[in-house]
Amino acid sequence: MNYHPHLLCTVAFVVNLLTHCCSCCRAYVFFSSPIQKDLVAQIKRDSSILPRIGALSEMNLEYFPIDSQGFITDHERALEELFCESAEGFNKYNACLNAMATRISTVFASMREFPRVHYRIAKTIDASTMTTLRDMVPTKIAAGVWNYLSKYKTSIPEFPQTETCELLIVDRSVDQIAPIIHEWTYDAMCHDLLCMDGNKYVHEVSSKNGSASEKKEVLLEDHDPVWLELRHSHIADASERLHDKMTHFVSKNKAAQLQQARAGGELSTRDLQKMVQALPQYTDQIDKLSLHVEIAGKLNVIIREQCLRDVGQLEQDLVFGDAGTKELINFFRTQLGVSRENKLRLLMIYAAINPEKFESDKGTKMMQLAGLSADDMIAVNNMRCLCTDTKKSSGGGFTLKFDVQKKKHAHRKERTTEQSAWALSRFYPVLEELIEQLSKGELPKDEYNCMNDPSPSFHVVPTTTSTSARTSPAHSMRSRRTGGSWARPRGSDDGYSSDSVLKHASSDFQKHGQRIFVFVIGGATRSELRAAHKLSSKLKREVILGSSSLDDPLQFITKLKMMSAEELTLDDLHI
Figure 1 (tube, helix red, strand yellow):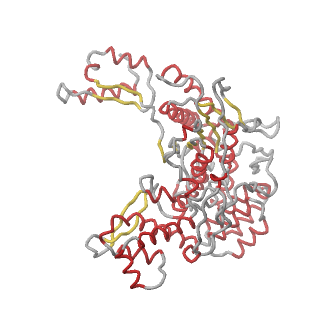
Figure 2 (cartoon, helix red, strand yellow):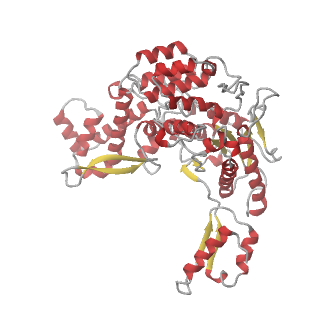
Figure 3 (tube, rainbow, N blue to C red):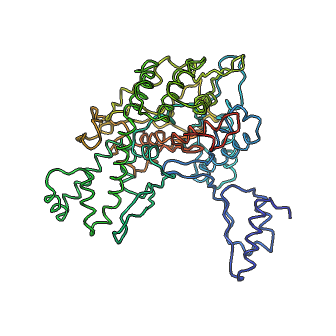
């Protein structure tokens, strides 16, 4: 028989294994991706194999969940394979597109959802400008997904025949700033500032015999209730809440109160942590809380030592048009203690907002003023490959043209309807606006197309937000523990308060409206993942974010450098 190679290898391995087992043993074979039905039929007709197979099933699980509302297709080199200038000549281009479309489609196969597929269209500056393959990436992915979905309607039992949800496909060009700017939530700060391996955090704890400390690995994931509550909170809010939790623990424990009386006076969060850890009978209860007190303390020290509040303020002033070239030059000249990495991130934000400044030697002079290296500028230059509005110059050099429609100064409009509760929380990812537009059926027609017209039974669910949902309860701010006054006027849901985002985390959003899926080609950010959680509560519709990868700022910058025309290795790069 002429079996499909993939199927043949799997079944052959299973049969070989069964020959060494007793006759009562059976094989249960599950495929993560679809297999052709005629190949399954051949297996059924094989009398030597069929009796030994207990199950042969397709699972459609070619994706990797990153949390309850996020998944990736694990294409870490998508930027390099799809968007670099030489990508069109590589076989990797089509291979990456096909694999990504397949994996996205299995999400809908496993969840029994049939989406209306929206995608960002390729935009050219004028009729004389040729549309490149990298401009067509979202279109090609959308077509590939739609092709698989059409097959699912006839090949998968109980697969919906009419639209049940929305899918929006965009690429990283939709927002070049979100992967670079400092995001001030607890989750983003941990992954940006701490040396974490994925979600794994390593810290030192006292050994059981008390003689020395030992390293312990912990996972910052959904099973940790403290992490689940605080992950989308502003770092200042998280620090305050941790202190309140520790104080509450002490107030409910007589032994702890006795130690507090002996110490005298008001205690800091660190003092409270040490005092509670001295009570061995409460070790299990306090372990997770102490872990996060330690993490928040480290983050606040790094923020202070690296002058990140000054960096963050300038970043957001640049984005919202409150600062420009003069302020950036002055910052580079006066803030000598700021790291090279943070200066690079500032310069990349500036380049995205003011591309014309890099058309001459001005970019080189800014680089020299910031003390950046030549390979740092590779990252700035390669941002042009992410833009569908790039016009090739006749002279062979490149011109940064991230968005020809962009205003000269402000990159984002201030969101007056959502007053920030904390300092440095003005920034929001473009994806947040796009999801809200999609939910209302208001995506710009000249920028987004749809693969399928909605069926007559498909209706966009209108969303309303009550006053109570927009207002979060007030809390006091203890500036002595967070290294300065973070607070701004409260009274609105800005997406940073854990009350506003996670209060209804266990709600069944499907009862309120159809799901919204968004897929970002080229890497998603933690600010975009936070927006998915926030908007699920606000819109009363579950928002699920997918991407080729989930990137922290240094990972994204490294990937931009790897897009260089010259062959580079990680050893060649300096981050």
